[in-house]
Length: 317
Image (cartoon, rainbow, N blue to C red; front, side, top):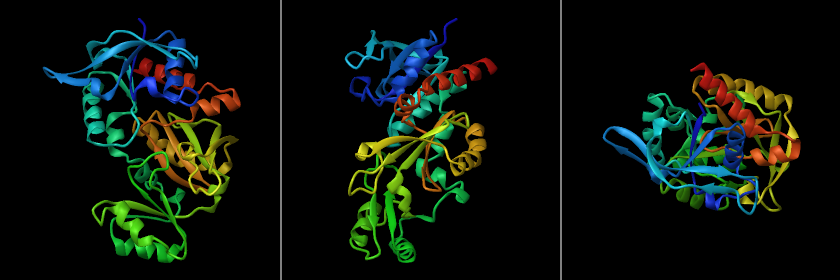
């Protein structure tokens, strides 16, 4: 019996062909002879106590001019799928929450959801890193103007960022002179109504913000260092950074060892750690990227490694 793989993602029509990690995953699953079924979050629904979706059969190709063929949509229970890849990009808003709750119903019926729905709800990508304080730089999470100002006074050079951002959006660096500190705090906290993170600036960002991909707690042996463009403090590719692959350092591997047992325990099969210098800054659990760049630079097939891991989990079930 062929394995049925569903994917919940942003519109496949609009992906970046060269960079999209979800496409790499789908292509690997197709190479294994598995059936592909495509969904977007708005296609999920609940009817008569059953979580369902309007889903379409899908075929993919590594062809920049025609990377997918989608069939006709049909309504099917989510539990018809053996595995569903939840690949909707942040932000984690109420609609994302509702999607995970519907997927959880399929999970209860035996479908493997990657990543586990409870863990998607439990672990904010910036706060999750703080579960491993031995790996993190000095930081503060607060919406208090006084506490945030005190943190800046202590560390002088500080990054301020929202807890729900992605792609480097709304990240500010405030230097020792404190220029614009007040307006940054007011804007990000919405005048004290929303928590944010303050983090001591890590100068090693100039050498890149490394993305380390982990499959069931095992790191891919190379990281993608996302190097900021001139005049930028953000290495995110979406913010204009460039990606340069590098072997993991001893410190990178130590950080992975600290995090790995929790990832396995919580059913987080595919995550991306963000590491700057010696410090863990984020643990991305929703839709980690950088598969394509690492595959290209090092001749890897990370999507296939993930599918093999998924296949092993299905066998164990």
